[in-house]
Image 1 (cartoon, rainbow, N blue to C red):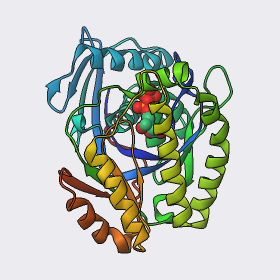
Image 2 (cartoon, rainbow, N blue to C red):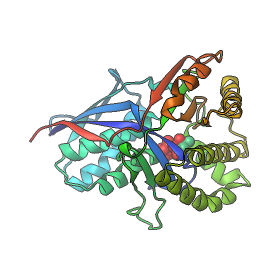
Image 3 (cartoon, rainbow, N blue to C red):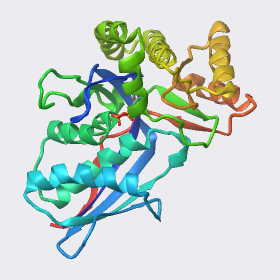
Length: 328
Ligand code: DP6
């Protein structure tokens, strides 16, 4: 019972921040993302009655007990569905540095969901796979489809309507997302803990929830219309609102370093000089810049000229998660 899958990472254009149910990992808001062409995880899993415990190997190293525990609890959901109790050996590789805070949980849990479902001979729809991936990590639900993707917050108590589906495939629109790596350090406070703190302490939490519907509607339309300025403006706006929520938590959460802030100003300077470029930032210090293909070189040069940017990774809209190998 063995299978191998690849899933690409994704970056939210309209951010997910906050949960309506922690146990089932149900998001309090919908979100919209772009699947990334250049960053992916490949995961191979084998279930066997001979294995005594689950074993997780991440980038050729035995994972920590915490990481293995989170993966085991996630696999229990799939084992229960399949009615199979075998333990598993999981080997997972990212083609990018895990510690750099580049959303490895999104591509990681999406690849694991696909590989484990196949190895357990579960025949599931893309929607069901996304519902399952969400239980590993909210953003992982969005790495099942490729291209431009919408995650629904859903309303049901069991989370069966909290899943991601495509708005448009990768070929719909060639836009670029450049990632400027400003630090290799792991993030200080993870998304899950950050979201919980915002929910329980930020005076702006409810206002964030209330405004999300309008942002989602506007972004969906910008994607369908291929309106780049609209997409960029909405992305930057949603990013800054999410960070305002983090900052207004108690104690305040600050994900940026000095280089992140320098880069935000540099993107806006470029825009003032006439190049449509817009930034977005997640729960870490890396800067992500959205632009059109004809402006990619200019944006890359701008990022590379900022002291403290170590590396720039270019992305196009990336493909669906898929099975690479499987036993019949
Ligand atoms: C800032 O999906 O990592 O990247 O569901 O707790 O695993 P959990 O959180 P996660 O959060 C992502 C937060 C974000 C914004 C986004 O991707 O929408």
